[in-house]
Image (cartoon, rainbow, N blue to C red; front, side, top):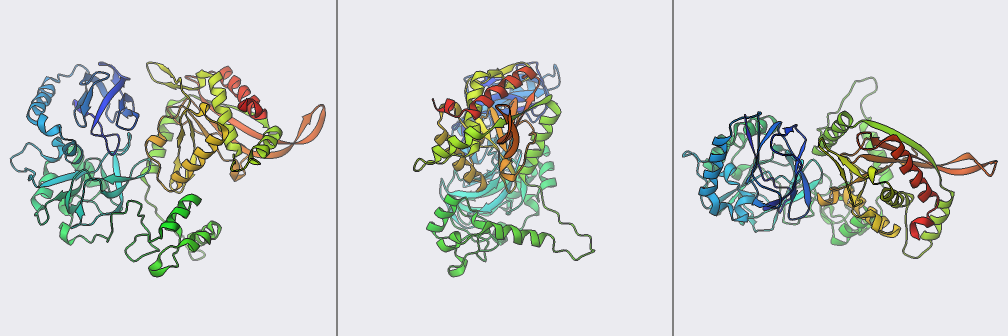
Length: 550
């Protein structure tokens, strides 16, 4: 049966989008996960992935055209299926609701098709607005409420942060596009639900929203309702909003969940402690405050020892009685689910091969020492690798490509993603136009993005658009390894640690500093000789760092 695909909401502030490029045409076969189009939002141009399979039967917006969120974008269905009724229905809907959909607030907080169904049994009162689970990333299908920053009865102004939502990529702040009183909360902290599920209701203080909650639940699309029932309690099964035990909170957007620092589960920290923690990349949720009421103060940050924390955590994990079988179940995070999906897709679609090469690091070690002797300058070996990779990509554009079923896309710009391990998994912040930046600029950006990653403050823009990826496990003592390609990239570079080994120089065996690099390539876009040539160029840059500065 044919499905209508609407203009997605690809950022938290997006009210309309522009079709930058269609990657499929009418008549093409569509698989789940295929990229349908590139959509220009208010923040960036992002890929829009299909969650359906079938044939592309209709394109509602041509390249360069602009339309509000939830407008008809395309129709996917069975081959040669009659979609005249769907097209007629959409035209009727557009005529009836054109005035209403022109208002950004209505589009964001209460999409017409979701919150005001065309049934006599349920009409949303004019004095309330339904807020649904937002789509905060291009691949997000459901979300988890990490933290509520408002409670039922609180006054809400436009621009206030309502909650922190955990997506498949990061935990992001969700901003209110409406003002009024928070009358109802549809999902408690830790609960998960599909995009467009009932999240909250905002309206005039004292308004009875019982009928609205019931009406929304019974009139949402069957597919969405069925999914919601399997993932989270429906609104009908919840206690009334006025009786729901919501933790106390305030409007500070940087609040985090904590089981240590206060009775109500919120972190209490001085502004100086927060700033110092951000500078050092320390997660405040791991700190025990010594100030009044468990407040985290400057000395707590200065005295924090992550090694002690890891040891304590490990001791807790193995505390089961000797001889007793014990297991602990940990719910998979949205990020972990997304990682599994991406890895599975990469392994089943890309045709991989690897090229491994040892790099003489003697000159790199000496050059880094000289560079870091300059006041206020500090670069890592990883920064040298990232810069050298960007330079090598300029000489080998075939490695800087993407594969689609119809074409190979050559990226004329270079944007290197740097894999960063965090508590919940792995994220890949991106350094745009890497080849145009100096070693010190790259070092500063990598450090800043790594801190944001560990604090779950990366934005979708900062994790989008990579053309190549670098993954470094050298700091963990790993000699060499092979990474899985971060699609849609065609290759990923795995960086091992620097080890002292016997090497031959000028006919003599001496002790040398050696680093092993492994390039994993998608054979659909990169041939073996191309991969080998790229590695040779990369080797020359790293072994002669002066060539990257000249």
